[in-house]
View 1: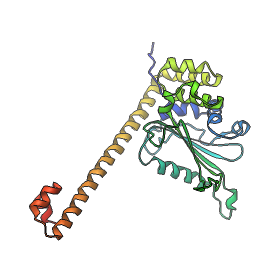
View 2: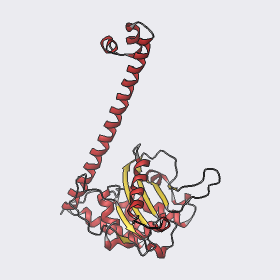
View 3: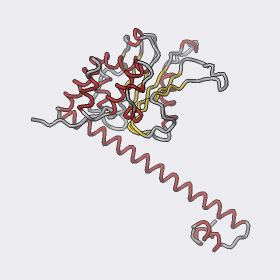
View 4: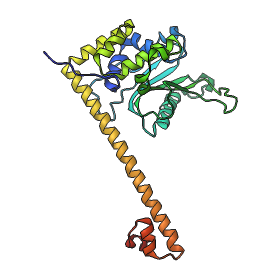
Length: 284
């Protein structure tokens, strides 16, 4: 008998297999009801915009597995699961939001007819802006907090925080439901998921889907491929950042050495102070 492998929905392939398919729209609806301040009847009319889920598309170009949908009132929603918070993520999620908003522009259209666009980001670890479970960013006047428009929402959900919170720390039932979903998404422990699934019929349905995936060699290969891709991507980002920092520090040394050289300071002393070689300083 095939031994099951451990799944976490922090893996974007597994996340979409559970939340981004037609047969599980009720599961996605339940999650969205816990996040958005939108009437349930509006969310219940959601339409998935990428209904054809091509499981083999795992290249960097085609393997972007976030979930895109449209609600009954025309609101567009983009949902992304991210294992790690990166320094450029705020700009990245704003860019994704702007792409959705721009797609709604038609020639000669009244700007007031543009749709509301929402991005939802679930972050596995490393979110460093604050310690909140759920952050909702909008455009407000700095002093009065008056909203400029209601067409921009960026949600950031902290899975690392969810792991540490208890139900008793939740202020209301909606937050408790959200906490259970985030714990369900974050964990790779089947027993924890089973316990959480006992609190909700739709969560039990999601858990059944995961159990089926855990028994499939093909699903394991696809899951592992996405995990490897994400790990490699994170390593490249980290290495690129380190190289950028090192290059910036070296450039600062060159600029400092050049300034000292113009002041007539002895090259040997400049080399001692900056760590540059005499040959590097002489070329300046």
